[in-house]
Length: 207
Image (cartoon, rainbow, N blue to C red):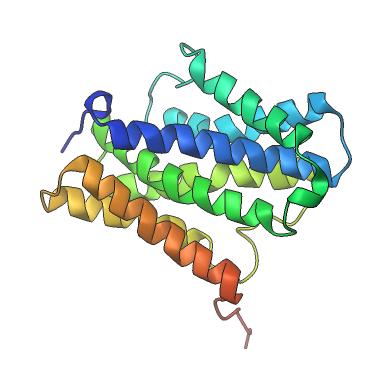
């Protein structure tokens, strides 16, 4: 099963949204460390492009940002915007919410691009998850924070729900744009509920 992302405006928009919101989380992480605007932009680019880079390496696709001016510019502009917004405008957990939007959007787009390159549905779901969490892992490693994928956070589960919903709906014959929109909404809904209600999975207790 293959898809053609070039004719799907919703899936293309999810890619732009993911890059912008993930880049903003990189810049917000730099803000927490009182870094310079250069660090804001650097982290924004690493986080905004990191997940997609890992995805394209996995599916043996050309790196998505190599031949695009628009995508790096989106990441740079999102990072600069964070720099100019006063710190007291950001809620304490805003980085979590921005990350949730990027996570949901990238989960779907990552799975869709995997399908486009001929990956089977089950591994496509996995690739969507990995693409969605990779940028955040890079961000947290660079700034010395515990990665969101660690602990009891409902995080990878939300990425899985988004990408799996999209792939299942696509197999069922739902139009790609609608399947992408539904997948992103359910993934964001789960992650958003986890943030708002502090929902957590039970940790391993040992023997």
